[in-house]
Image (cartoon, rainbow, N blue to C red; front, side, top):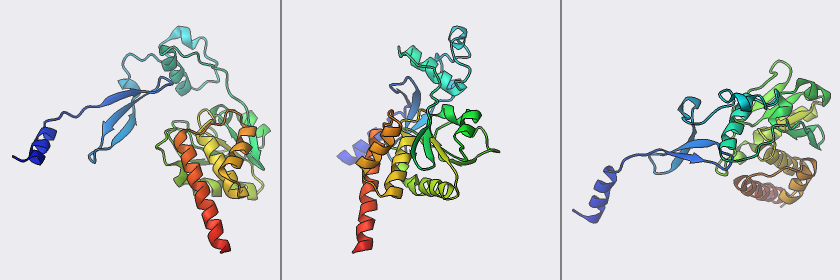
Amino acid sequence: MSLLQRLHSARKKLTKVETVVTKPDGSQVLEKRNRDGGFRQESIREEDEEGLKTIQEDKEASSKVDGEVSKRRAKKVARARQFGFVVDLKPDLQVANFAEGVCISSQDVAADFALLKKHKITHILNCATGIKNMFPKNFQYLNIELLDEPSTMIKHHFRVTNEFILNAVSNKGNVLIHCNAGISRSCTIAIAYVMWSQRKSYFDAFEVVKKARPGCRPNDGFMRQLREYEDELFRSAVCRTS
């Protein structure tokens, strides 16, 4: 038997396993191997999360949770507490206006009808995971469910998000872009829009959004994709002028 045959034989004897990966915020995902040898991550269903208390099961914790905090966020808080994190439960109600007719925020603003009306929001771009559209009869929504993971190809959605925002603003509308925390995904889409609509570099567009939303911090994978997007935008501009 050749070495290659022995390797194939040994591989067949390997047992497939699933790995529970715990992230820095205490949330967990199930990592599985694909047929091509790569890995994929799946959310762990609530009924499979043995040993993880939820706010509903923890009466003492639930009494401290503000009523405006979503159930899903509350569960994340419970997980985070297990790992020793101190969690701020106050709603993040900042509405950061970074361009004409366009704002970014956390999921808390998207659930506050009075606040949305105060800022004359007409369109909502929801790029969070697991956050439903709260007022579908009152606002026009665009849903793009994105994981805040460096491997998520957020760049593939820039054309759709840019056009959604531009169409709204062109018709005198006001757009709110939100994810969960209003730090990575929504800010990445906001930066891409500024780069595209104002022909700004990645650095300059980042500064525009950062000034409006100081907590702006796309993950490393998103920043890499924004720099790639910058190259694509300026390359196409050069081609048009040459």
